[in-house]
Length: 99
Image 1 (cartoon, one colour):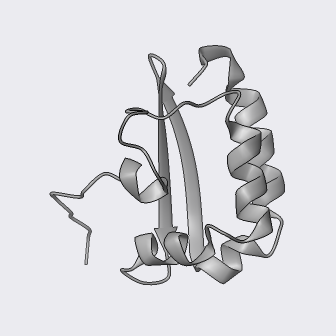
Image 2 (image 1 turned 90 degrees about the vertical axis):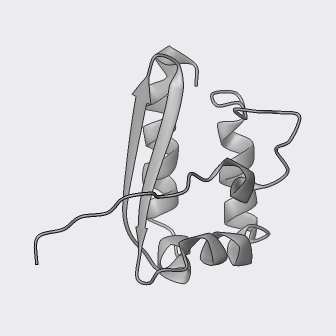
């Protein structure tokens, strides 16, 4: 991520999160982080199948628009292998929460 663009990226997501898409996807919370040129996007969903929700809505016009709007600010971590958002998703290897 372009280090100076965090305000623009936040603004794009603010607009996106006021649309119908978060509800359609079952998004409960979104947090964006940046660290030394890297961009981290934490998204919590209603259920355990958040990656499926993203895949199901990735052709929605509003999803396509935010993807295009983000291109000047965020590039794929590995452009050679990136084909869809699923290609950039981390795999959780530990979870803890207070019961």
